[in-house]
Amino acid sequence: MRDHTKLKAFELADEVVLLVYGLTARFPKEELYGLTSQIRRAAISVPSNIVEGCARDSQADYLRFLHMAFGSLRELHYQLSLAKRLDFLSNENLLIIEPKVTETEKVLNGLIQALKKG
Image 1 (spheres, rainbow, N blue to C red):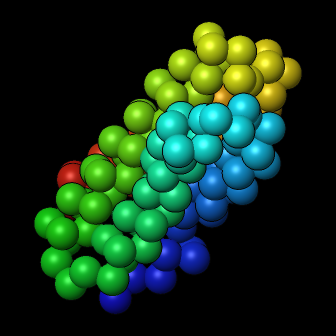
Image 2: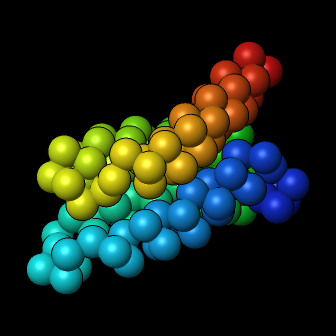
């Protein structure tokens, strides 16, 4: 079993979740079960899938969960863009979270590519 706490990708994904919760707390209340919920779900899915993948025995399962985490990150990226266009998220707040999401994508993708090579 792998230790997820030693992965930079997990550390970054965890930071993204905390940022997401802080930023979405300011979203309109009528979005609580809409975009707020979707953004939070996508964000939580990233570190959760990393943790679950680390608990799997096979390399193939580990990679499959890392791919799911990466897909959730891409989903989050879109949802944050949508929130900005709907004026739920300010430019200032987008500039806080977007670089962290992008960095997480790069680190997670690097981990995936390294594992695929061998």
